[in-house]
Each structure stands twice: as C-alpha cells, then as structure tokens.
Length: 279
Image 1 (cartoon, rainbow, N blue to C red):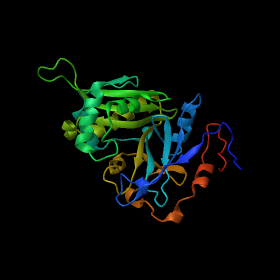
Image 2: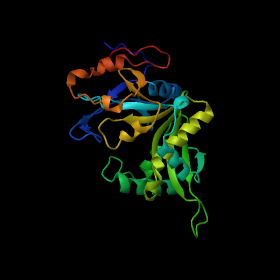
Image 3: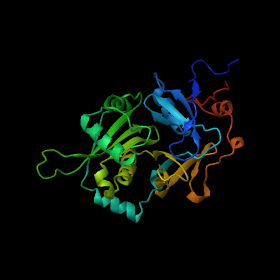
Image 4: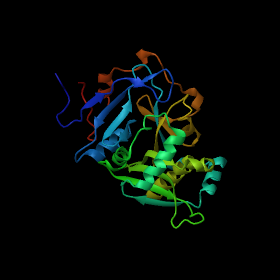
C-alpha cells in the first residue's frame, strides 16, 4: 500500500555507476521530476534539503555505502574573502557581468567545449553536443539566469570575448550555481573562484542570504576547493551546519551508515511542510 499523497512528487533511484569524484566507489542518486505550477516552490524547498537541479530533475546523492557528497552553501552576511580571493577579484575587475535569459548560444557552446576538453575530457559531459548543451541551459521550469562574463576586446577584436558563464537559479533564499565554465587559457586568473565571489555579490545586492555551490566532496581534488570559502555551511545529518575543520569530515563507506531509500524519502519535506510517507 502506498501512503504518498497523489499530489506528492514521486521519487526514484538511479542504477549504480562509477563515482566521478572518488575512485573505487559507486554512485546512486535519488531524484524526482521538477514540473508544473509548483516547480519553483519544490526547487526552493528541496534545495534546502541538499538537492540540486539538472534541467527538469531534482536529485541528491543516495549511495548505498557512502555519504561523502555534502551540499554546500555560503552564508553571505558572514562571508569574508581571503587575500588570494581578493587578488582574484582584482585580476578580473575588468570583466563585465551580463545576466541574460536561459538561452544557449554558439559562443557559449564553443567556450564550454574548450573548457571540457581542457579540464574534464574524461568526464560524464565530455560527449555533450550542442543540442544537449542547449537543453542543459534552456530546459528549466524555474527562475534561472545565464550570467556571462566578457573580457576587454583584444587587438583586432570588435566585440568583447566571452570569458566565463554560469547557469544560475534564483531561489527564495539565495542563488544556486547550477553549472559554470570558463576559458581554460585564463586559468591563472582564477576565474572559477571569481565567479563564486561575484555570485556572493549578486546575492548580497539582492538581499538573499545564501549562495548554493553544489556538492563538496571530502577527499576529492575536483571538489575540495569549495572548503576554501569562509562562512561555508554543509548539509549533513539532515541539517545545515558550519563546516568547521574540513579535515573532520570524511565519507563513510559502511553500508549500515546509510538509511534505506524508503526512510530517506519519508524524511523529505514538501513545500507545504507535510512529510512524504514511505512508499
């Protein structure tokens, strides 16, 4: 017998596959469709519970014997840039921020391909064509923006070249950085860091308390950089908490440390605050 309400979103689990962050581990995701009139409220509510958006799907890691992936967000009011982060701000002060509607362009895709080929040639998105890229940008049932960063024109250039791009969702309590990429030839400019710093300013100007960064993964060289930002909170044990010393966190690999899927779903709260019953 099912105890979920008819209006409740249905949750599913992906088949296990190789983890992209930690060698020798398998990943599995808990996910639900994001659609209809309640899409924005569902996105707002589940983002506060460690979920992330990918097109019209909300997902959260639900690995059978690992809890390494921890959703992370910056508390804007308490954030203070480090010296190296301030240098990144100065190095990129010439960039022009241009928020646009979620619409994919050939220039964005060309930059995206250069970024992937340079930094993630063996990643899960390596084979993404322009149509799949357009779907990633444009298929959004919530309030989203594409934030473009353009540089000063070089010799012989008539227009400002695109230096970086971030697909950003606007939540009721912050901005969520869905996916960002940048010119790999500008790696020394710390563009990835700069985009996060600029989103802190975007959130501050809008009066929003948080910048959602996605998942921080202790032990992963790809995701470890997020711990370098001050006022960082992680979603762990069913609540948001200060990260404290990053070395105090590690991904458990014992299967008994992970709740069964039915219990995980039962603890999820919907926008109307009613818990979802077990399936």
